[in-house]
Length: 83
Image: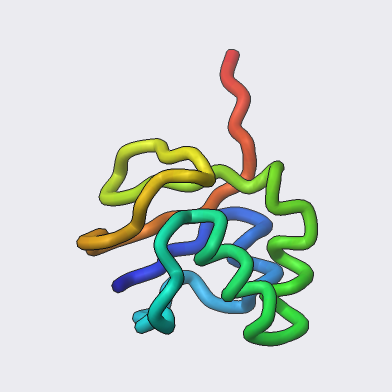
């Protein structure tokens, strides 16, 4: 699956996107974030406050408990405000 990072999440991870194959047992957005946190210091820093990072699965906003099976693209980004 393709992971895409935006704004300060991208800056902390050090890349805009990547292709990953999570191990078996990674079933939800929260599982995926937990796995990413263990991939290195840059990921641990990017997801140090995972509750703040927002997620979209195939361009649809998703909650931490959302299933990732079959996802083509998962994007991570900071909260947004508008005005």
